Length: 450
Image (cartoon, one colour):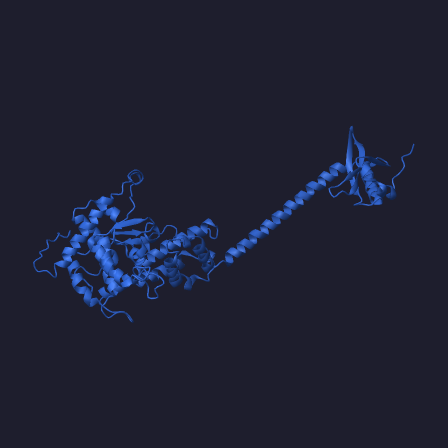
């Protein structure tokens, strides 16, 4: 009995109750009634045939995505193909494989294009652009947010190389600039620039912006030369002379007091410049230096001697209305971190600079020029001459213990010993400064080591 063929009208009449049933159209073409996720009735047509000894079923098309006439035409094409030995299932597999291959080839082309564009972008990336990225991601993590390094880079490097493509930067270009810095007498600055540039190119290589480090194999000795370790400290005779010469130096009273505070506490000039009155307890004689103000980012407490307290008390009488011990002129912040250093440097140089103080040479001492940091070294040296143990002096200086085992296991802070060290130093300074105004005081001097 011949199978009755389907019609479009019959297909449209199929209802939800027919879902799961199989419709036949003759010639091996049949359709499975389904309902999609949206609740719509669909019919998936398929063709069952034999391939050798196997019975196989090939999907044809889905109604109503394709009309019944189109589905029958595809069915006929499949049957014609089978008569020629073309298996529809294998053909479809081959088409899928070819589609995947085409997609893979297209992805490869896209990847090659992206690499080409990346190469072009890398070529266009200027030295200035790359430095800006380094500043944002790496340099900004430094304690000063990279301001000092960028000041030197903006001054000496970028005006010449800023617009040059990063990949075109050569060793000779960088060396020429560093040589110019050395020639103007700034060997230390040249070494600092060299160190910063090495860090920058390490950053650039990690991101494959460049393939070769242009400064590889070079050391600071080949740029600015080995930096001599500074060993200047003031003798006791110079401390007495300093006290005698200060009135003629035309310094702010707060700067004079700062000099004695640095000497009697062994603090760094930056720590004092950023000091707040809230961190200084004059009643208990303690000055707390928070980690953010210390060079090694570690909290530090200084136990003030009577001498140091007197200096802070005199300073407090002047700046007590400010949050800062040494406020800036606008009162909104502390003084510039280089202010005290510049004031002293102007007064130990032989020739005045334009628009600066004329009190040159007023603070020059017999041992030569000196800096605020030399006061810290002087205080530490005096502690040693007064019999303070080296380990206690290191604690007073807030130095990090270099021996890892000691750093881990020896946690005692030697607070009592530190307090005694500062007391001894303060008492000695009081004696030295008093010797000028009291004829009946005779000071026994320590022999200065050769």
